Length: 242
Image (tube, rainbow, N blue to C red):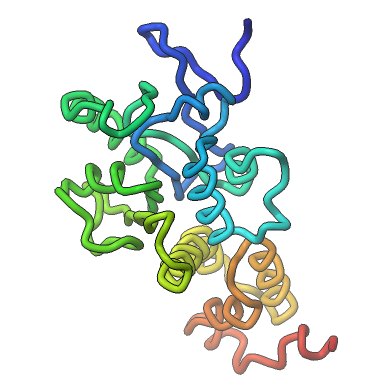
């Protein structure tokens, strides 16, 4: 029987999931402690009940739902430049089945593959991957952490899946803004628009995969370099076309 989805066979013969890396350089990676049996069985990341819920919330924070095509969110997010990996490759039913020794043995390789790819943001589904990357005993709060990884990346820890929506919504909005900045700012600052037509074309392009409004994106992109080159921002086309 052949492998399905993203299944991979470890050196000891265990079935697991392969790392998923986009064709482009992946600056944002979703990381967990280790694969769950339902995920390994299906060949796709986060297929358990809570895992599906957490991945859906992360996905909708960083990309509009209508642009998440296909049956599996891991495939849709990889197509949008998001990578997937785990701290420990061996699957288990629960976190208590992953020993401290196994984590300690896996951590150097885990850090290395993220550092070598110059990952700028690690989205830690639950706390485990983020905790160990930051060398912390506990997380004081979910969301973006103040500390950086050993190579200078930021870490986002997902909120409790059962926390009230009014508490988790602003945390996930913060994630959306961070991913937007990582995926767009370097390109935008390197190649300044020649005119306002180019500027607004870029705004529309970014909006296709952003949780921000057109106004929010335009104001973020309208930095000092653009002000100096193009002058005062004219009325945006989405108002003129109404």
